[in-house]
Image 1 (cartoon, rainbow, N blue to C red):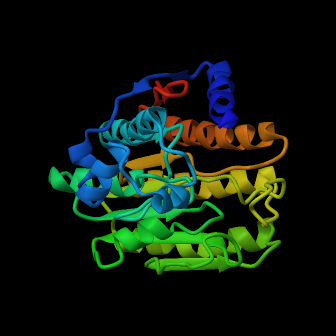
Image 2 (image 1 turned 120 degrees about the vertical axis):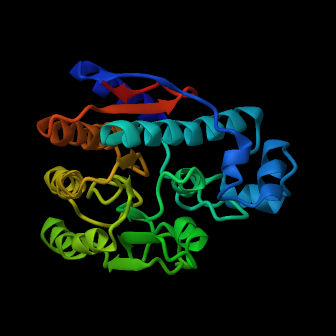
Length: 295
């Protein structure tokens, strides 16, 4: 949890970002992607102990507030993306949450909620998810498994959590220890398939746990390699022209400052790429942590 404040503080020092508190998500919007009974039971503290253990957090009112703010941050950032080209949330990326249950420290799937919210308003029809967290986006894959208008791309560690993988539309599995060269080669190979899908909206789950210093990642990317990963994704999305939402995802390096710096680098890269195209930039972060949005 410490990393969220660290990332915000690093970006504040740059002087190029404006910070905004995220609104709390409307439960009705959350239910666009999740089973209504599951949503109600979580909000009311009625989940059974097994469901709580699967999430990994003890239930509390503070967890409810943080969860709804995290989703609200992604929704607000998606609105900014629709208006100005890109938006970012300094939380979110909770890709292990399934339609009817949470998992892996993820209660609700903000990625899926954003997509379903935009579609429900008729603002987009097709969406793509570029999930580069080291852990497969199994919840996102499950929610959209039968949906031909949502492309789910997950590039992740083959031997890492979740150990029971779901089938994304495109899965790129990596062996333990993969470094910059092989990783970037595979990324350059798969990214054009996103453009070929012709999405109206793109979500980038930008987890930094592929770093070699990450205690849970099992890959060997350098900070330079991770930055190049971000550049490839961001420049492709800018050139293609669909609105882009960037969400935080995972990161577990020791010391934690390495994770914070890597996350900050992603948002700095986004600001640089879109500023070079003379685009406006804005982002949001949940009010349960420090709020954030590039101006």
